[in-house]
Image (cartoon, rainbow, N blue to C red; front, side):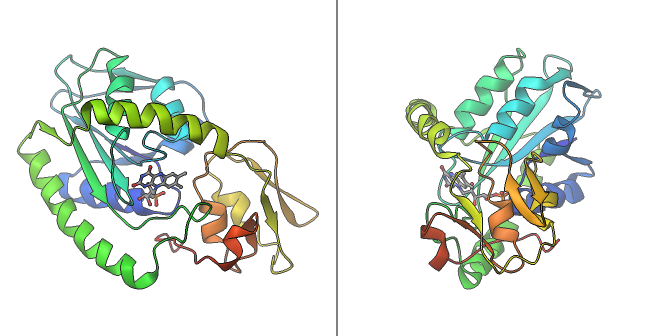
Length: 251
Ligand SMILES: Cc1cc2nc3c(=O)[nH]c(=O)nc-3n(C[C@H](O)[C@H](O)[C@H](O)COP(=O)(O)O)c2cc1C
């Protein structure tokens, strides 16, 4: 089984490709989380994978919640792995992942840092189409390596150690402060299609009088609403007005 979380499609793409190569199934962490506590029993010999984006040198709130709420039933020597998609580096996210898995008294067998196009439009200009193509060609080759590593039961992989621990400690404090929804607004370009509400992985966007409203003060900052809006009607403060948008998902 491969559990994935995605805002703009990178991690779902990687999860699906890995699943094609290994014959596994995939499941969306955000969807499963809507049902509250859950349990997954790992079959003998099965590998348990997690594919997700790094947020602020650590885990997104959705992945952290998922890992805190899933009951993993498995043999002690079960092979658990993470593929962390990132715009620049996975430093810190591996540390948080290992810690979360360690809470269940399991070891993480293997971690891979998978560079993919950057999507964080609220902080900077995301990857443009030309650069994204190059990133994706490279990512496709990396995914072949991941599949081979998994087939060979490779152990180890990416480990950011003490540096990662420090980075995630500092940056996750910034994430807690930054993941606010107040600066989101819609412009007259909004066509009331409701896509943003449908795409929100934690269902906090509600359509009111035909316009999206963010109904919680904080969200995961996954960027799905702002990057996937078909008319670029969603903005986050002034900074995003002149920035591009990135999305691999064509849904
Ligand atoms: C809130 C947020 C924080 C991010 N933080 C980092 C980071 O610390 N390091 C990094 O290399 N990329 C960072 N990124 C980029 C994403 O991890 C990267 O683009 C990822 O592949 C997006 O995956 P997705 O399309 O599955 O959502 C961040 C993106 C978001 C939205």
